[in-house]
Image 1 (cartoon, one colour):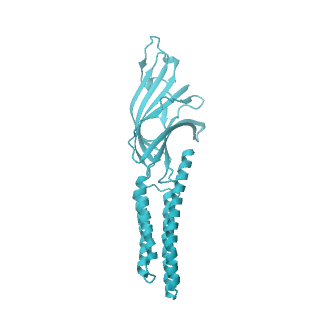
Image 2 (cartoon, one colour; image 1 turned 180 degrees about the vertical axis):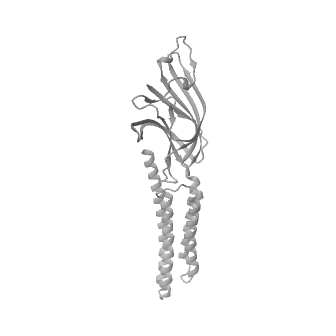
Image 3 (tube, helix red, strand yellow; image 1 turned 30 degrees about the vertical axis):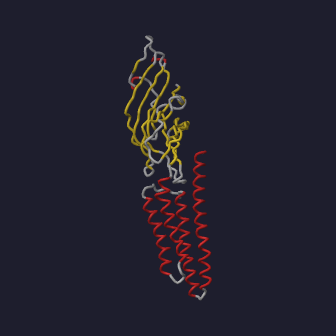
Length: 306
């Protein structure tokens, strides 16, 4: 039996990274031909799905999904069109390595756990697969919907089950995180640059500025991390933050060095060191920032091509 599968995406309401779910509203269309249902009077008719043979299609990555509508129309020649509308939560594999320049794949995975690959041949209904022009989800752009077939392996089943995958390519709009997170982190870390413009005998202000910058970075980041899931790897933003913390810590070390030089009657060398750092620090700051953005964009492009 050949079964055609199509999905029309009405809307995506939200994407929850913490729970790795997204809330969607979509219409699932199943088409197949059953000669036993042919009608000689030449008229189409309707029946309950439970009264006829059907592929027992199941949304495999459903989390809290509700079926709100179902219809079964049978043509005179026995062609069956089954339409089902769903709304609710679905799970998706989260990949935040490029965060906040990341792209995510939001899948809708259709599988039959009743029939094996030898009993059903799945095919995609290209005409019945599309999405609405405007979606409700904020801070994301759903760029495309790709289709693929994979084998879902189960330990108790030798051949596994066929899974029809509708993968929506979602791209994050980074403006929110760049203005609310990255920019404040940059400003906090750049305050440590002020120590190079203070006199070498002003020890307390120099140390206070560097320590305050480090504590500010740590506090701000821990507060923001509450909105992200605990993941076993560093995101692009994590790596950038660590680089900024090392840069700020270097200013603290340099402060200690210049103070010791001044105490050792090497005031001129201490002043020269500060003058050099007035150029070196912003150069390193710009280098770290540019590398962070380049790596984020490259990884994001790699995810798209993959």
